[in-house]
Image (cartoon, rainbow, N blue to C red; front, side):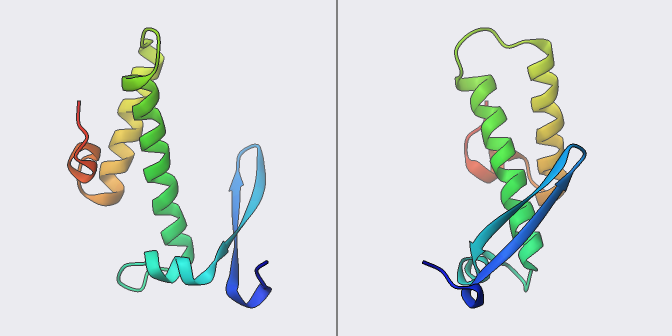
Length: 96
């Protein structure tokens, strides 16, 4: 069980609600680059995770890809590149 002193609460607010996630502080320090804040580390992970998930749905899911899904993937990949300065394919070695 973690204690308050070695965990960090990250609050997430969206247009339809809010949530909190409790993460080990040492993990956030390990994942940070160039003294990034905990919020920046978690934000990077959110962008990466969302890009991975939409990529999997579009390219590895069953069924036909709709125009809406293709549009969402395009937008997410643009956001990924804006955040990290490289394409999803270049960053992950997984490009279609």
